[in-house]
Image (tube, rainbow, N blue to C red; front, top):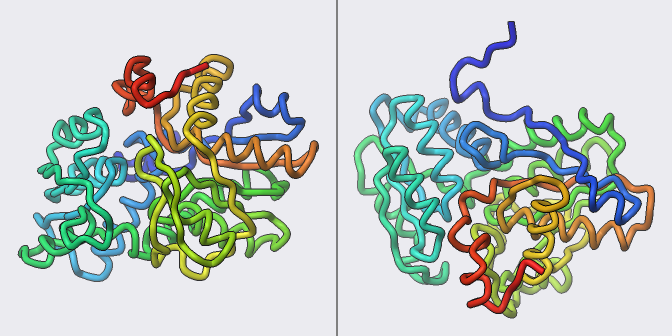
Length: 324
């Protein structure tokens, strides 16, 4: 009998899905790692699990303790699920710009949720810095610190990367995904490069993020903005330090939205905005590389977390965007 031992044991081992419409369009195998099928609904379940396990192993988190984090939503949701499964409390700081669906989900899961103004990282009241400060003042509490906690990228080096390698039988030409904390991109990139240095690792970046310019020029500069949530960054996190990056592709919102709706209408995949960035970058990369290549990207989370925005025609129109 193949039975998972609770929520925690069900994290990972997600399927690799061929994205038929874009594969046929480009002549490449465009494959999506279906991490929206994790039990908490997103790729962030992996990082949340490893961060909590790491704190337990180091003796930093004791029974009845509290896990504190600043998050755009999905890591918080993963942490809240795992805290429930393991008997911990969960305190989440989230920017007030994030979707109501994610805020409601956190509350439903029993997390204490504090919405705070969205301010740049350099501001001491940035949600990440604020969560760390509050955690340091609490008894029997840890700060998850997903951006700079290397347990994050280790989760993907030890699980996501090996799964992709095995699922493709090592026949993979490129790995491309966007990054917020850097954990997923970094861990998978490091593992795949260790197996075959010829595999291309390509960073996908939305407008408004400085990572595209960092890869291209070595300096962080930003332009424009994006409706996507939880990806992009204006700094190089500890998880991204020393990580092999062969190139970067920038995707604007118009293309990301078009891709999200094609995934829905032609492939039956109801995905969030970051997946739109990822798949759009995979398509752009396929066109650069030419036919016959195998490109793997990440299907981060489902579209239901963005129903009131990304799948709301009026809201999209207010941003000058359209599904068509």
